[in-house]
Length: 271
Image (cartoon, rainbow, N blue to C red; front, side, top):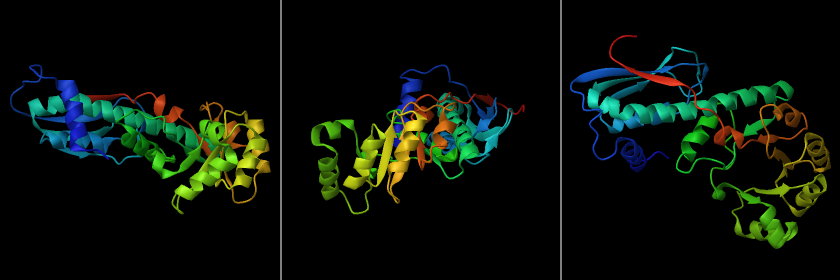
């Protein structure tokens, strides 16, 4: 999903039209160094930035690998001017993605301490233009991407229900969707979840409900209907939701609020 046009936009945004800061002659080497513990992600995007600038770049670890302070995760070699031009973009992308992967791994670990079958998923609350990188970072952390776009699954939300009603919405979208497309319905109560399942929903998402109400809703669903909890779930409340019996816990927090992992980019031969 990372295109040449995207990389060009990133670099143009950072370099501007009259860069003299990076007019440094000669050849150099560089390395991306972790300054804290975490989970690596986004290194393929960082490599792509340097590749675009004709700088040789190699990731030293795979996405999803645990890293510690002072670990070198990427090495580069090429013209000093181009190495420096790609530095900040590469650091920002890798740091952002690794931050998402790190909190996702934490979330998965916390959920699996309670129930090792529950999935932790992201949402569509991603940064415009960075969805591919952010979703891949979630996978690197052991999470599920959920739907990548609106086309990946039909989700009947509160506005659809207001306009059409649960039964009409499910029926209408079922007629228009592929046989391979699942339909999920957002439910605001356990009873609403049961109605959605009766109407033919493949998945029922209990939205913005406390854990005890989610557990009630799961009990009301027929066998074969998947259940999901979502809405304001944090790392602290995640274990309570994992204990409700749901199949999936989705967290917008993974992509919209994860802090960036701290990286440093260093040039020259000194380790």
